[in-house]
Image (cartoon, rainbow, N blue to C red; front, top):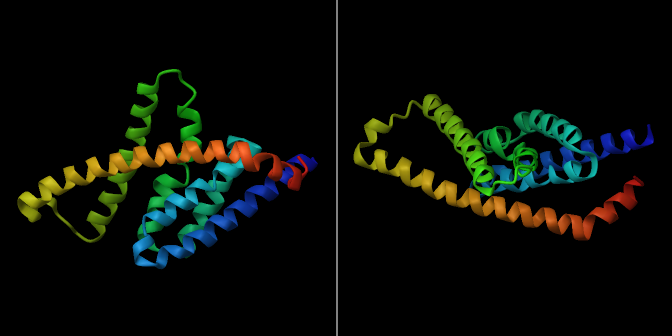
Length: 177
């Protein structure tokens, strides 16, 4: 019972920390960076408590983020960055790196398309109305976004390694697991 209480406490602390980080999304130049950083914090309950508590952390933090964060940043967190570390842990189980990255790219592009479609509908933006610029800019943004996503995935992997090597034992000792 004590272990479950510690896991729940860790999840609650992480969710509140994510919410605090997401408040920085009101600075215009941090709209995309803040959800990415906030999403990395889901690693803590994922490593310490497992996927169930990490998912609970994501759900609680998503509700809080929806209430308090900047609109575009909250969509990026809720639709992708918040649950991506959990998905990453699941997708890295298969032996095939090609399948792993294919699945990750499908999830990323689906999330980006969902957010883009939401804002296009909300602000009544039509790609056709932008002429040639609209056709090519969407393709260019997807290519650059996929490149940025692959870099984010690599950084997230290295951050997980850093956490396991340097912080895991300290967190375990503090929470008395």
